Image (cartoon, rainbow, N blue to C red; front, side, top):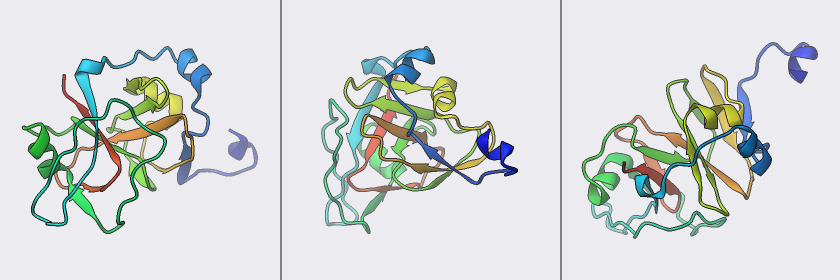
Amino acid sequence: MDNRAKGVRSTTSLFVGADVNAAAVKAANLTPLPTKERKIVVVARTKNTEALFFEKPINRVTKSRPVADKAWHVEIQPFVEAAYPPYRVGMAYYELSKSEKVTADKQIAVVEVDTNQVYVGDGARALLGLPNGVCRVKPTLNQDYKIYVESTSLNRHLKVGTHLLLLTG
């Protein structure tokens, strides 16, 4: 609204996560996803490009992650198939780690680092202030919350060392 008052007609990027805090989550009346219906895993890969291995699900999202070679990545379908077959489109949410174009049909998940609560759905999208259309989002350095975007792809490249949220229920 501030930009509109200044005469700016549109924006092509939003900074996501800067205004997410405990008060905003409480005010949005979001219901956390039950622990049994989701798993958060670390994306991992061996040096052999054909062999994938799966680390045990982690109990908590951490503020730091292992440093990984930027060139290393895995495709989402084979990675999930190796761990929790079968892969279903929409069951995996990748961690927002770089600027991404998010369409209106993609769900957003917000994970509170301290309590490991996961909030998914339209309320999470509204919490971040995302419009109903296509927008470009950039991650911010909010140490208390991690933002995840639903993957509707079979071949999305996941960076090694990032987290992946899987809906199992």
